[in-house]
Image (cartoon, rainbow, N blue to C red; front, side, top):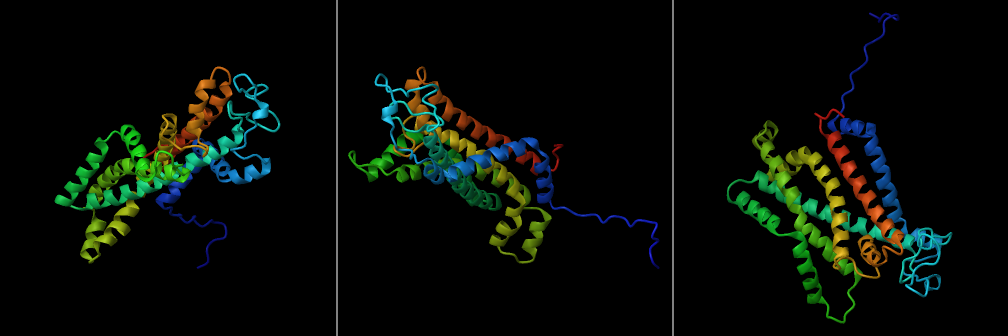
Length: 321
């Protein structure tokens, strides 16, 4: 029997996965949109640092000492020497272009933050999944390792460990490669920050390991690796993703703090934290030198934190946003 042309057929119900629902909630969040745009611009600027250098014809190590005053070596002009050639002014003392220092410093901070977050998350997820699924002595040993690592104060250990490692491989007169110091910082961050992810994942796995789908996988003869990687891990990706989004800004501020106390990225590699440290002695005479990298770090960390909060709300099915 043909349907009556005057009656409309009921619309089919379209099912959506949890990921699709989370993406819909995230797209409607204006805070998430603004934060994502800010982070995307920062990422593009950091990745395009060599291109910006070619466009301006100025490298981060070029020194324009002829544009500094003889007394105090301050930039000539207003607001730290801002001009058509130097859009953000010049660095007091050395006369380096602040824009190029900022662009390459942004790339350094993002590289360290993302690399540290990736390594720490990988270690934390693996340790947490194994510790949460295991029982008996293995769970006890891994939990003890997590608690022992959490007991170490990060900053004090970094102050002691980074110089010791450098002295182990380089002498007092040797020039330490910038990549070596960056590698030590990334390793230090990863060693001390995988524990939070591991504890979170362990708790999630403990709550899921007795669920029906896990019991069904065991009854069907699935291996332990299959249960861990194909059954449990896909069900805890949401809190892991939120943890990563909140770890990155923490690493950015921690890297800036290490540079501020003198054990961060070394010269001549540009770094936002070291820019703030170098600007302290000129803060009264040239406040723009402190203001520019300080506001950059503030906006970068704020955007990451707001985006992480929005992502957490989007992934939470009970959220009202």
